[in-house]
Every structure is written in C-alpha cells, then in structure tokens.
Length: 476
Image 1: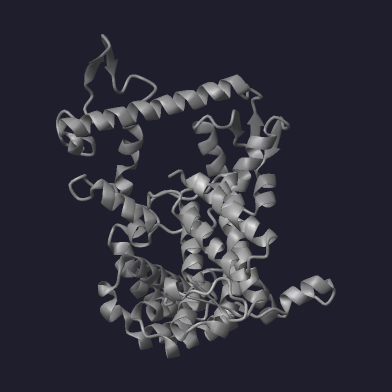
Image 2: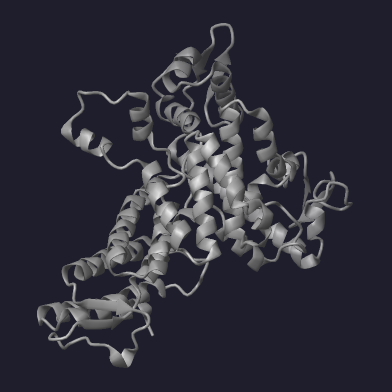
C-alpha cells in the first residue's frame, strides 16, 4: 500500500471524527495510528524522517497530549486488549490500546537520527537544533501526564528521557546566580526565567527517584552517569568523584551495551577535565589515561569511526556504529565565526589588521594567523599576509558565481573518481593496499596508469589521488 496515501486517509478520518463528534476515544485511536504510520513511512532503520513528516509527527503528538490532558476519562495502555477497547460508549471511561510513552521515546530517537544525519556546519543543522525546545516541551508534558497516571517503571523511563536532554548542558543562569552577578535591572520576563529551577536541582530530583524506584540496571546506570557528567561539567569535582566511586560502575561497565559504554567513556573524560580545572593533575591523568592511550578516542566517545580494513568491519556493522555517534552541539564557534566574517566581508576591505580580528573574535593572535594562513593556502581567501604590519591584504580576485559552481563541480567529480576507484579496488580484492603504505602496487607508489588511452602520473597532477588519506593517515 502507498504509505503516504495511508497517512492522508488517517488524517481525513480524524477530521471526519471531529466534525461528527464521534467521541474522543475514536479520535485518540486514529491519532495513535497516524503517529505509527509516520514512524513506519520509511522502513529503513538507518534512514531519518524528512522535514515534512517530522513536523507532522510533532504536531500529532502535541494534539494527542492535548486530548489526554483535557479528558481524564481516557485510559490508554499496552495491556488493554483490542477486544476490550471502549471507543464509543461515553457513559463509561474510554479504553484505548496504545502507549504514549513509546511514541515519545521513538520521537526522541528520530530527533537524534535527524541530527546525526545533518551536516553540523550547515544552516539546516541550526534549524533542526531549534526543534529540541519543542521535543523537550513534549517530554515535559509527558512527564506531567505520567506522574499522574503512569506506573513507576514508566515514570523512570520518561525521567531518563528528561535527564538525557539536560545533563550535558551548562546552566549559565545558575552559574551567574552563584556568583552574585544577576542584575537588579532585568526585565520581568528575564527575572521569571532566572527564577526557574536550576538544572542541578532538576537532575538531583529526577536521578534520586530513579535510584530509589528503578528495577532495571540500564536506566539506573544511565542516570548515574548523567548525574556524574552534570556535576563534572559544573566543576563539582567531589560530588562527581564520590558518586562514581560509590556506584562501582568501573567494575562491570564492560558488560553494558555499547551506548552505555560510550556514555561512561564521555563521563570519564568530563570527570578528568573537571579534575584538571581544579588543579588535580594526578586525578585528571588517571581519568583520561585509558581513553587517550587507546589510540581510538573518537570511536570510544562515539564521535567518529576509525579507518579499518574491511575484514574487521562489514557494511552493517559500520551502519550500527554510525548510529551510535553523538550529536555535535558546538564546534569552534569563534574560529568559524572568523572564517565566516572573512568570507562575507573580504570584498569590502582593502586590508584589515589581525589585531582587530583577534580583539573582535576574542582569539589569540597565533590562532588568527593560523586560520587566515590556512584559508590562503587552501585558496579559500584571495589575500596575502604583511608580516611587518600584521595585516591581511585583500587581492579582490574573488571568483564569480560561475567560477564557484565550476569549483564545486570539480570537487564533486574528484570525489566521484575516488569513490569509483575504491569500488573497483574492492571488487578486485586489493582494498587493503589502498591504506597500506608499504604494499607494492598500491596508490602510494609513484606509478603511472592508463585510462582511456591517456597516461597519468599520480604526483604530477594538481589532483592527487589519495592525497588526503596520505596526509592524515597518522591521525587514524
């Protein structure tokens, strides 16, 4: 069946049910089916929701929660059999088979997949990140609903969802209040926001409930790790250290599933950074030693994959590991702001002082010099550096829009050539030589080869095949 047509049919049924006052039970049942159809629209587990489907999903969950809050006589649950459902008889409480908690958990997972599959340096990533406020709002509404009608196990699950959206965020308002920097001339709205509950209080309340009530090791372990991470992020070293030692997680974390192990590794790194900020170098060294000495810190922290031979990881394993990667929330904002400024206003300036740029973006002079030098070397910025005066001299030779399109086309063609040759090597069974420095006959050798009757010398052309891999192989 056409999934899109099925979703539209459910929407039409919901409109008919509302117009004819068929009852809130039927409307809730239709809403459950709409959300389930949106989740099943793409059967590929690795794929993520398209923007229009994602917006429909958020709207539908909000509408479903509105109905549940307005009508207290509606009971929902997975343990309600379909033959015992009451969708139409208004004299009795409505009984609908379904679980709102499962739908919200799936929505949260879809949001994570959307962020993982979006370029973190693009405007689209920023736009998608704005949806986190709405996602957190839905989780908060579900939390309120479950506290009144949910079981202890369900409350623990929704508490963990709330914790996962809180633990990694620094509470600037609480930090300012602790330093006594909250001004008295704030507007009423700012004062109301500043008087909100501190994240430390929220984390303490939610985590302690899970410690006392949860019966599953996984939820309790995740809550402890998030609690430690939050303490360490706010430089509460002794609370974080004591909680880690009392939990004894380091004794059996190797038996946990990979996402929990990644969370543990990230917590240990944050704990080490916290110790370093407190001047406890030995404790920082002990916390960071295992991660840093492994040689695969990015993989252990869920921030990237190592380049391995195909014999060690097949395509399915690679997809699974990519799904474990965490979202990128902030990356060198000041440096990227400087680059963006130069890209945008290079045509306006004849010259600009590096001291001015350093002060404008609060960066050290060597950092500014390094960023501008890389941009000039990579031909991203048509300029030169005047060392005696510490100025950037603009050449005013920016490419036209046609030239920019030609450059993008050349880059895509280069990527296409490299991908085609990688596939060709894989089919011929010599893929291992692609990464091996010493293997004869690989791309590392300065050999010419024939294609379409033309001879190419690898090191003589401007485009060097495998050049990026040669330069960066040591990083892996």
